Length: 175
Image (cartoon, rainbow, N blue to C red; front, side, top):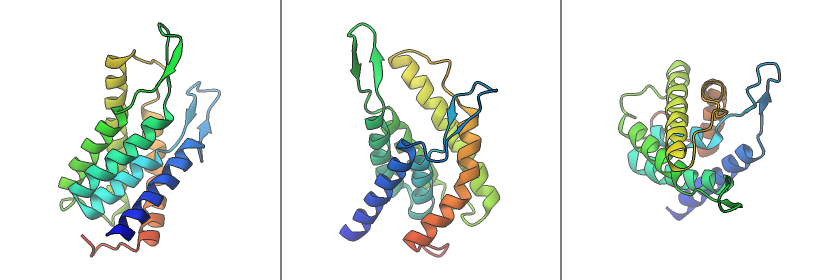
C-alpha cells in the first residue's frame, strides 16, 4: 500500500513537472491563442480513475489539483501583491476523478477512440469549470484557452496512457 502510494506520488510529481515546464507546448503566433500545452496532471487523474475507480480518482484528483493550484499565482490589483488561489483545481479535479471513476465500468479502457473522446470531453469540461469558478472568485479572463488545450491533451492522451500503463504495469484485467 505504501509503495503503491509512493509510486503514484512520484507519477504526480513528474506529471506536474512536465506541465510546469510546458513540455510539448505549442504557440501559434498567427492565431494569437497563446501557449497551448497538454494537461499531464488531468491525463494522470483520468488514467487512474478509469483503472482504479472513484475512490482513487478522488484522492489523486485532489492532490493533482493541489499541485496545479500551487503553480498558479493571481495578481490582486487592490492588494498589489501576488495571492495564491488554492482549491479551484483541487475541487474540479476531484469531481472529475470521482465521476470518471464511477463510470469506469461503462468505458472501454483499451479503445483509443474512447480515450480520445473521454479526455477531450473531460478536459473541455474541466477547463470551462475552472474558468467559471476563477471568474466568480476573481475575474473572468478572455484569454483563457478552452478548445485548443482540450484537443491537444486528447491527442497526447493515448501515448501518455500507454506510457502510464507500461510504467504502472496495469492492464485491462486490473480493476
